[in-house]
Length: 264
Image (cartoon, rainbow, N blue to C red; front, side):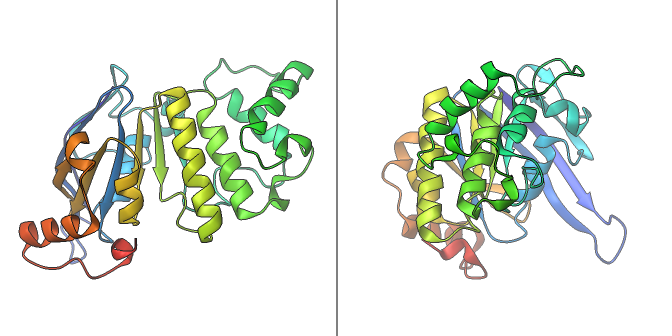
């Protein structure tokens, strides 16, 4: 489904600011895997997501998605196969457009481009149906501008837009981090329901260790551009935050104390 093979990326190579963002990283996801990713700031988590989505290209290594070599495929071409939700609720939607117009664009993402992407009656009925699953009343506000929605409502809409075409892989980039606790809990529950409903292959970056433990069937920990720990489904069921902190200290010889990764 997704295979990253020896991905290596260096920023500002040959300068005093040189940084190895990904250090020969290899990772494979099977169909239906839900992998959570944790690590300190600068560990390479966002670079990993940008590499998969096509924002960045590797200096070394190859990326295969859904049986295709996409290593040098542009971001917009990969977008037909990838759904992504960002940390910022303002990203991923067009605030000046209505809910139904945003949904119409997302609905057409993996379809042949034509001059007609507008909202038909059949599509409007379908949009109402899928919006009902969010339990936020958005199905009754199809003509409302997205910019008028709350952060939680926009993030729920972004999640729906990223998934209702059932992409080959779903990328969740700290998509609950900017929300208040109640909204974050709502989006977390919606994420679990939607991923399970469609059997989506998912990679989720989070600083919340408890969230990383509770969601998905696999967990990886990154540090300094490397995957330093992988936890399978059986071991993950018994995992605790203390276990993760102890593993980091055992592997790196120091405590993980420099950012939000300690939050539970």
